[in-house]
Image (cartoon, rainbow, N blue to C red; front, side, top):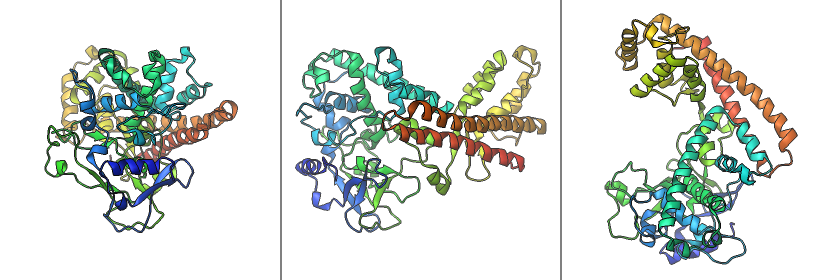
Length: 478
């Protein structure tokens, strides 16, 4: 049992939860990697596992009355991260957040194994914050798409940090209520940014969809939820699911003026019963391993990928390089794809069979091969408008393809891309083993875990690229 479990239950009960109807408990996972959520009894399908009162959920509604208003308003991510930042537990002090202390106490102590932590630390490496070179080494071993996506995540983090930092500068009195001594003792921003990174990663990795806004698709519809944090992700096991709230059923925001939204109830899997002692899982949606690693710091093991039929990779950096290698022509083609909505987010997929490129990638390659090398200047192409119109007709479905010769060139380009990806992946897998043996064998305890994640990312690149190559060889139509 998690040491913070009983205090958490007592806190939830004080906030109106019926603890006697809680049918789960956190226990050490079977692989000893952390905690999981386990059934306390046999549970029929679609049975409530627990209910958390709306007032015990950590979101913009339950926090807003405790913070001065500002324009523009803080996003839900920013205000939740701000609150966690102010109240991060600290060894050597018994102070805790008077609002959500028992819940915050069960959050992860750190995110040392998360790639965004390494990325942010690298930016401050001159300050001596990088840990023995392990983080920098792992950053150098990541796949191109993961490295590119980390840049996106880092920009989002720094934008939120700047907004919260500016907010605290404008509202210095807020810091006086902090139970985190590093916030209230005047320590400089280089140190306090690590506490905000911890807070931000808790929000990014643990928040769930929860209606707080009128618009169902508003990105601010999220919350942190006690108990649910213990559930692990699975792409293959039967998964739990949330009971629809009043706000979702009626498609409305929670009533204005209330200090909390709807209660949250988690239900057991709808199609199978749960046995006492079984682990209960969440599913974060169908995401690539690249996405899961950047956002959450883990990957689906290969065995689970193979059994689930999943397997897709983002190859945008590789394809972008093809366009950039074409000079002025490539830049013009990029502009066309941006204007038409086809630039970036290019992927290869194993399923459904046959393994194939996604339509965005096919469309981009058709354009690239409509203006084949060695032409590097668009002014040298007299019939560019005609070629562009033909490409648009193929893109919008008015015609099946541009021409047989264009399709042949596209398949050859795709074949070169896949051979390059598979070859690079094979080399990097061997390189990873050598680097780990020579430089990281005695590194932090999480290094072996991260090595497995990075190896899986490269293995998946190789596996998917080879599968698409086989489809090309067999003459599969895309």
